[in-house]
Length: 435
Image (cartoon, rainbow, N blue to C red; front, side, top):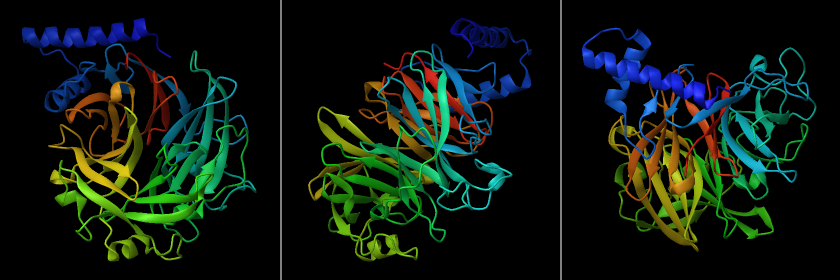
């Protein structure tokens, strides 16, 4: 980890020198820095932490006062003898009884990609759900004091396209974003698992191109998004809160308007909603959303990130509609559940690529700020959103590549943010004055 003094001294020197030379009319800036400053002039959105500073290491640009540490890399040897798979995606952080943190990390890998998975060059372990599946979940146990990894291991193997998921009272819910035969499910993973476990598949949560999951802490109702251009938004209402994975799977419907298109027609004014029972939760064919929309369910323009937001005892579910709204650049929807109904509205929407481009994973941090990962063109950002004003701001930028940022989440202390540079295979911990 680069120390704060060294790192921010170099950043301040670079930024200050560039400003001074530019003001004097002297053309001494190097190509990469010139390009970075040009992009910032067109894209920067001010926020509570000030402008981003170029990272001299070329990994992650952050505001003044924030630092990062690389805590994981694709291909690194885990303590159990496996390798960390490629394509780290959604993550969740759990407090363990001994005071450490368990960071649960998805890997979005397809079938038949053995060289990218946890056991290249050798057979998959017997606990793998499917020996052809390269995806799964890995775990990094961290010391909260210094973010040193205490241990690393594989938790789930043999699944496919583990994209997003969600933190739950019962563990990490990891979701397969696929409808390959035999796949397309949600699995439950134990944050305390110190070794690879047998998969625990949850068919009651449906079989479709899952993206993310979020739990209403008042009711244990589980909300589920679907990454399709004509997606539905689902929820599982448990028959018994003590058995949260058995119950009725339902799809959201806007009252009075069958097959309502939220990407084109929804605005900031709340629309009343109710829920359509799903005919069959886990069919062999990819028909869940088609059946639900035939029964009147609303269409979501690529539902991706999900998170529960709790403010003054009020719970809402935030949804990234990745290609919703103007120019198909993205909307953030707010669902306010209430019994068998509730309301849905656009909390914020992109007005251009300078605001937000194709939001994916999202989380709520200190000060009720929402943080969103982009999956668009160019160098992607973590954007911040003030839900009270609908204003976006820049928080972080992938300086290493044009690959997406994924997995944004906070540790239990709310002072540490985790994120992935997915294509680069880096898992980072960020600390600073979030509050």
